[in-house]
Length: 407
Image 1 (cartoon, rainbow, N blue to C red):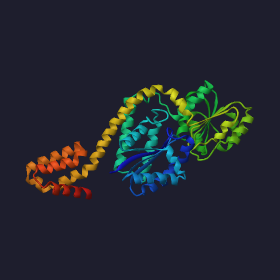
Image 2: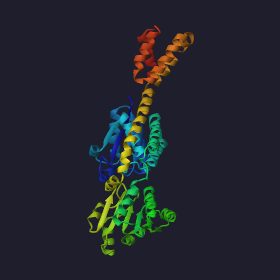
Image 3: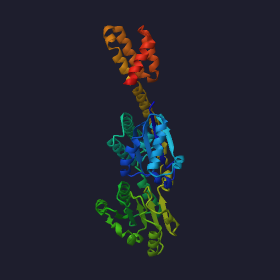
Image 4: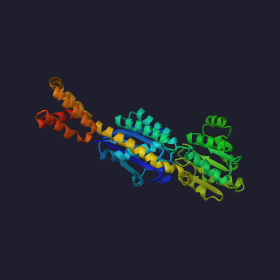
């Protein structure tokens, strides 16, 4: 029996300081996925890594290969296996439901956010490019997107789009009341940073953008009518900003305690708010020890999200009904997939007899139809079918399953 499973860490099971140990950049997937796919018994695998989750969706022969995959991933990332205590493991229908919820935004920190769809698509694209997906994960991906579309269109869960980027800006707005004219520095020009910048523009903030790739910062600043700060000038200019939002793909601290301490002296200890929505974190946690510096990381945003999204939670139940409707369809397809080779063997095994005996043809077609309606009854239905045509049930049944096993 093939096992579909989902394993990983997310904001519900582990704090950011533990999630960031397992966080994977796009380049990481190109060496991790092929290594995981070579584990004996692993048929298909994909890896989804965002600021709120690192999850593996896979198909294996049994539990043993699944466990080896988990341990191998932890080893490849240089993470202590004790981190498993913070992880979750789901199988079959529960795993399928989880994947559908993730793609639909029902598992997001900010319920119903739509950014996860593009992240999910990118994770699948890489896995398929590396030949790490097959019939089951391909179908799972297609049905996950179908479920996500149904949830968005059949419920009100995605009204007034909200994302982690939005919540970061909303937190800044609550702190200052109005952001009009407030000097805001955006460190990073990736997707999440761009979303934050768009929200800030609407609120008329005085926006500055810095990025390691200067051309990208110029491009985004031009689009949003903001200003550009050269990345190498960050230490000299940091004291000028009231709000700093950090979102980059760096694996190390871009802003540390020493840098902020120097900036605070230069700004006369006027309060500074720093929001770090990067995973791994790009701001040293010790920054929060400084007087008049208020640092928020990705987990801190959860509280803000919960307060703002009560209306969306009312729609979550409708989304769950859609998810389980689609899970039921997927699991029926999976059951049918298991017996499809038996159906093929039935058709091929009695091709000659079917042509000579019309009665046999009718019974054969009826048996195949019943098996498709109720795959779990395949063996019993085959026995009944063989008895109805007055054949030797044991001999014929053995013949069918021997052919099926070889298919």
